[in-house]
Structures are given as structure tokens and as C-alpha cells.
Length: 431
Image 1 (spheres, rainbow, N blue to C red):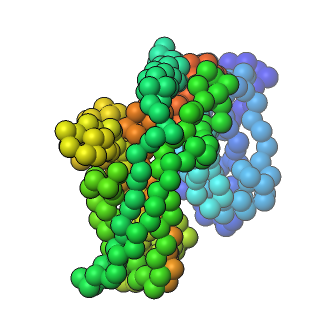
Image 2 (cartoon, one colour):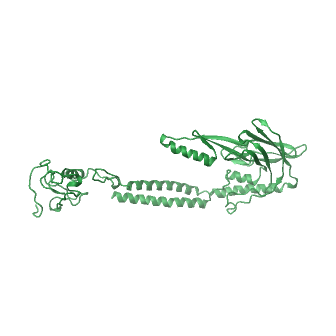
Image 3 (cartoon, helix red, strand yellow):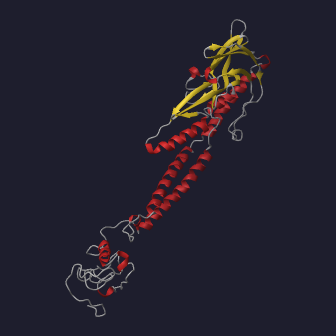
């Protein structure tokens, strides 16, 4: 044994020794000790190269540190020498090694009251992985879609409609275009009112415009020429939820078709929530959406709102007859080509039904009293109808190949960065 090492009397473990009170040395021996002093198991035993306590080697390799009353390892912090032994026993098996290894983000930190907490490194790791994964998936979808330039394809398809429309217009003599009249009648609560006749002149005013502001720049031909029959039907003392409008269309005094549309459709939906804890928040969100977004009323967990009729429109073609008048307009559901052509007589494309509808509705508060309805008759080859068909009623040709590629790359870069952060957190806490 190294003579320079501190000498301790050889004695048997004494259990809890002589009780003294807080702050006095008790423990498993007679001497107050830090690490390395007798603790009740005989001489201190710390294996060489302990990974958690590298300086705690047996013999002269470790010098005992004096204890102080009222310090962390002294009397008052843990309430006496018994707690000092508890600290030794908690951190070491008899061989001096922790019971098991855990990553740093899951290790527990000791406090004076015996509590513990888990480091937030694991939280940051999970957030970085989740964020990187979400951004990476979305970015990969955009990159995959960038292989097809759907915007250019749709613009080219629309331009084909324009070319067909221009050829059709050149073959017609619009100074001798068919005359169109509308006979409108309102029916409220099944009681018909008087019919009113409206003349529908052929209009060449450029009222049709692109909602896609970059369409012309990206190669779309203008919405011209514009030829359609259009007028405004005026009605008084209308109760929207109880009244229908019937409009009969005549061309060259020959009956063409009839509209039968309700001024307003009442719709409802009920709020749903999964648990009672979600009820209050879901109730407030549902009420706010009902009032602000739909202009509806909210009562007993149910939203009631209306869709109001804004415009009427049909598409027609020229038909030849053997008797006078020799030409007149008839409904045409064949153009533009749609999945559900049987009921495709209108001008407003509805993706859900796969057809052109005759009435255009808008969500909002019903308008009582005087109501004006714009009414239009279009040729089925009209470029506007081709524009609506190609864009599926949205008016938007979609994103270009370059836009999708840019978004995909823009999402993949932060995704990779988040994965790098997650890797750094893992390696730092794994070491």
C-alpha cells in the first residue's frame, strides 16, 4: 500500500453507528467521509476506469474530499449522514457502476426534494424529425408533379377551343343572328305571378375576362370574339326561400327551353366533436364559421345558411328546320365534352356533378324584395365555356412546371436542414 495514502482503522461495519444528529458524521463507519472513505462495506472499492466516475479509483489514485456541514454533500442539504449514504447507494451498485446506461436526453437530474425532470433535447429531436419528414413528403410530391407541365397542357387545350370558336364565328352572319326573347314568371308558395317578356339582344361587349392573371403572358389566347345574348331580369317583392323563377326562352319565335330555378336554397350542417373536452372550442369555431363565412344563423349546434341565385345561363346550337322559321336555337349538351352530358345545358361547370349547370349560386344572406338576375344565352362553342371546362370551373390553369419544381426544392432544403439538426442532437446526446 502506498504510504502517502490516508490510513483508516480496520474495523467491522457497524450498521448505522452511533446516532449523533443532523450534521454529525454517522454513516456506516466512524469517520466522516466523501468518496473513498469507509462506508460500511469495508474499504472503498472503485474499479479502475469507471466510465461515470473516472477519478474514483482505489488506493492513492483518489484523494478523499473533506465534507462541510450545510453543503451539498454535508449535513444539512439532505438532512444528515443517512442521506449521504443514500446518495452513494443511489448512484452505485456495489461495483460502483450505474444500473443501466441511458441517453442523456432521458437521464434524470437529482434535486434536493428528490424530484426529477427530463431534458428537452429529446423534444427538439422529435420536432426536427417530424418537421423534416412533413416538409420532405410535401416537397417530394411537388417534385414528382413537376415532371408534367399541366399548366401548359391546359392552356393548349383552351387555345384549341378558341380556334374552333373563331372558325365558327367566321361562318355566321351575326347581322342576321336569331332573335332571342325570354318570358319570365315567378312562382311563390306554388302561386304563380304574372309573366313578363324580356328581349335579349346579341351582345358583343367583352364582359368575359380571365381570373388567371398570368394566362395571356403564358400563351393563352384572348377570350374573343365575344358573342352572346344577355339581359337582366328584374323582379319585385321576392321572398327568396319561397320563390322560384321560370324563364322560357324563344329564338325566332320558336320555343327553345325553360329555366326553373329557386331564388335561394336553404342548407344546414351540424357541428361534430369527438370528446367532451373538444366541445366548447368546436362550438365556438362552428358558430364563427357559420356567421362569418356563410352569413348563416347558428342555433342548437346547427348552422342554417343560404345559397342565393346570381345568374342564369344556357348553351345552345343552331338547328335547321323544314318549316318556318328555318333556323332557331336549341339546347346543346354535347359541347364542351363532360363526364355527365345528360344534364349539361348550362354555362357554369360543376366538378362534383361533372356537368354545366344552368344556375350560378353564391353563399350569403338572402336578398328580400327586389332581385335582378343576369340571364345569358351562349353558343356551345363559346371560348368561355372551353375556358371553364379546361379549368374545371375555377378559372385557374394551375401551376407551371417551374413553379412546382421551385416549391419542391424550397421545401426539400429546410427538410434536409431539419434532418441535419436532428442528427446533430442525436450524436451530441448519444456521446
